[in-house]
Amino acid sequence: GAGVSQSPSNKVTEKGKDVELRCDPISGHTALYWYRQRLGQGLEFLIYFQGNSAPDKSGLPSDRFSAERTGESVSTLTIQRTQQEDSAVYLCASSLGGSRRFTGELFFGEGSRLTVL
Amino acid sequence: GNSVTQMEGPVTLSEEAFLTINCTYTATGYPSLFWYVQYPGEGLQLLLKATKADDKGSNKGFEATYRKETTSFHLEKGSVQVSDSAVYFCALSDPGAGGSYIPTFGRGTSLIVHP
Image (tube, rainbow over all chains, first blue to last red; front, side):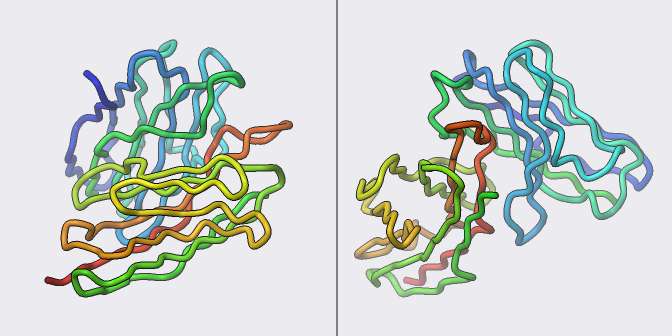
C-alpha cells in the first residue's frame, strides 16, 4: 500500500493476556518508530529501528514490551501480560532513514487502539 | 536534551477566527521543525515544516516561521474552519553532529472550532 498500515485497528483484551500489534511501513523506508498515545496525552516514544542496526529501545516502559522488525519491512510490537495502564493507541511511523536521507518527517499509520479490561 | 513545549488546550474558537498555537523548543543542535495534525480517529500527518532560521512553512492556510532567536515555531491561521478541528503537534528533529534520529514531539494542542 501507499501508506503505513497497522493492524488490528482495535483490540480488546483481558488483563494478563498477551497482544501483538503489527506495522507495515512504506516501502523503501528504512526507519520505523513505535509510539504510544494515551487518552488525552501526547506521543510517548517506545522504540526505533533503522535498517539492520540494533534498535533503540530506550522508550520501552517495561520488560513486558518488546518489538521486532524483519529487515526493512514489517514490525511487530508485543505486550505480554497486559495491564489496564497499557490501554492506549499505539502508533507506528516510518521514514527515510540514514544520515543521507533522513529529513525528520515521519509518516504515521492510523494506529492500533488497545483496550485492556 | 531536546524538548518541545506547546500551549495547553483545548483552544476553542468560532469559525473564521484567527488562530495561534504557541510552540517553543530547546535543542542541542540546529533542528528542523514540524507541525503535525491529527484528525479524529486518524494518525498524525505532516502539516508543514521549516528547516532553517527564518524559513516559513505553510500549508492549507496554516503558517509557522522558524524563529531561532526566540526558539519558537508558532502555528497561525487567519480564518479557521470547523474542519480544522483536530489535535496539533509541534515537533523537532535534530540528528546532526551525533544527535538523534528520534523526533521529539510536544504534548499536542486540541483545537475545537464552532460554526
